[in-house]
Image (cartoon, helix red, strand yellow):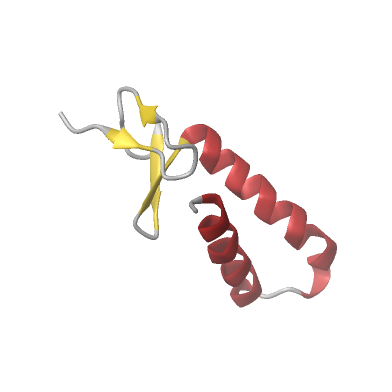
Length: 71
């Protein structure tokens, strides 16, 4: 059995099941709580740009926020 550590909060993920209790994004493992926080943080930034942002803008913001979370 492998042990998974969340790259954001640095806590171990008990009973790790990919896609259920942890998520892998750009070679970073996030627990479900940090994954939810990541999406909420990106949503807060992108919401004011609502009618005029592109997927490229979203992707750039997502990667920047993910890198910030996993310092």
